[in-house]
Image (cartoon, rainbow, N blue to C red; front, side, top):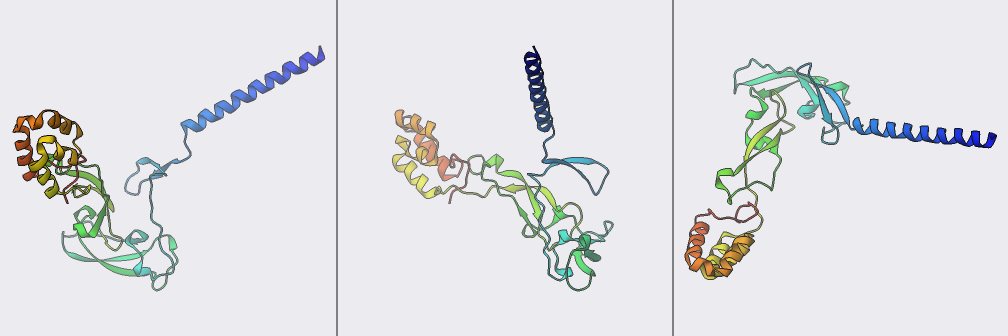
Length: 234
């Protein structure tokens, strides 16, 4: 009887341990470790940010303080300045960064918000999934842009901007036009551009008895018919 009683206690202990481990696992699944709360600088709002998607560049060390990039210094920017006017701001390194020279210095900047900088003063994420020549009415996309490290400006240094599609998949307009004129009745132009379904339709209909072939020649010559992946011609 004592042996049976001990075995029952053991079985109960094993079951309780099993359920406890499952509860811990569930809690960890609900609260992933890579999600943290970050206090915004401009307001009291708390935002949850995924650390896997958060990319903060590191500040360089061992250089002169006034040569630090803009995201590594604190500057007293005047938000009531006149747009386009050149201003002077007092700056200092953030969080006592190790740098040479004078800790407090002045830097000149143009009164404007970061999203008002010129296109050569910021870098934008390029997307190769936008529609360009295949859909002229949707030839722009919205992407994230970040101001260059040497530019001082008001507001957030990363902003959203509409950018025109300018990527190419390697298709040549001249090749597509020649194929459309010579072998368009067999769907060669559509096959070349990646429009496989339309190419099969042209092949078995002999170019729509010539009508479809003529239409495609006109569309390709006017750049209204582009590569199937939405890229631009070379």
